[in-house]
Image (tube, rainbow, N blue to C red):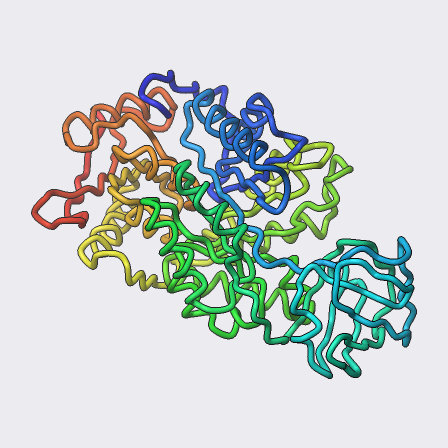
Length: 485
């Protein structure tokens, strides 16, 4: 909420889940008016997918997202999703091409097939880097092949999983060692654009090792940006180095689309749980993405399996769930957000039955801050506090607080608009702008007034404040209990 905006009366607000919703901007929701409706339905982060659209369209999407946040008076974050080195088929000889089981196809150099059995790729080194025995997955894994032989200028493959191909569909090479960097030249240009436009999160596709994440961080810092870097886990190499990749990142996205092609689909649920659990242990936010309510592209209701998928992601410990085509190109973008929010609200009470959250070992959080946050949670529970208010400089304190997974509402305050927007991704944290962060009595009065207006507190209720002094630089070292008068 901005300092100039009037609070929305509690009676007019739809209940919002503690788990956050990331909504992708696309043709179905590109206007400020539509994005306002998505925020009101429960979205708190907007994703701009750089794999689609022009630079001018990205500018328009960012402007609309920022304007929607101003209209609602709510800090709303923007995530720029870098496309990464996505390999695609070139132009096929015949459209579509039927790949029958056992048939032979040849990958050749170039971008256009000149015969029915020829395939080309937008990835120029493909013919050189494929080896006999490598598996080739096409069209999101609906067609599979294995390399049987190769020469200097072509690679022969046998179809092991039949299906239909169309031009420019995706290519995945599970286990193949490729020279393509995770950060392409197009990604670099888009990352610079994100940095110069003060974007809140930048996600990196096809991460294979910690160095990929650190390279993007270095690029953003060179531009003076403080954006958090989100590593998309969609390659087996990243899963093999999961602890190190998460440690290098500011957050993680479980990108199940390509991950489900690069790995055995039977393992995806287990891998998702591993990723979410490790993010919880390290105190990093984690987004679960891809096909969560996929049928809502054209239907008003999700399938039962999709509703269960969202619920299981929450029970795993996800901080956020993401909608892609459901909001970008779907027929019911607002309804998709509303439905996801309803599933979250129905599921989250089960978290209370699971007992305390696992111990967090956040290496980038000051130990005094960690102790103060842990103490504030224990005090809030013992006193039956109605709110925990966290004053934060960079957002780490609220990030750690979010991992405690208790149900005392948490209000995050900061004098930095950028920090407040980033808090929009953290589970259970409500960012509140306009608070006098550096004046204790004034902050308590501000929260008193705001909490009453929102119907959250009344006389006699207790509020726990977690804040700091300059005695310990960059650390929260004060926990204050305030009783509403």
